[in-house]
Length: 109
Image (cartoon, rainbow, N blue to C red; front, side):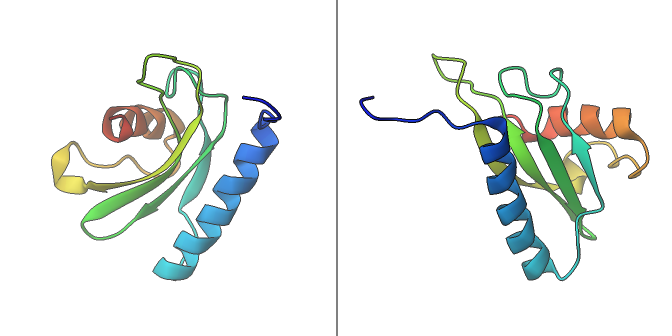
């Protein structure tokens, strides 16, 4: 692309922070706990922050997502809405490894 400027990790974090502000405003509460995504959670994305909200029936996860396309190097940011009935219970907010595993299993498309 002529004239295109590559986004930085900080640019992605800024977009995620803006999106988190919007979700927080809609739900009326802040995310339970931000979690930095290790490479095992999102293989092709930089280490960015996931934010997780929980309702009585669903989990909302905002963060980076894998690039499952032919290129494998794009950074996708997404808001996932997952029914809690689709898998094992969402781990507690202080179980960082469990949350990372749960996010990995439930947000990839």
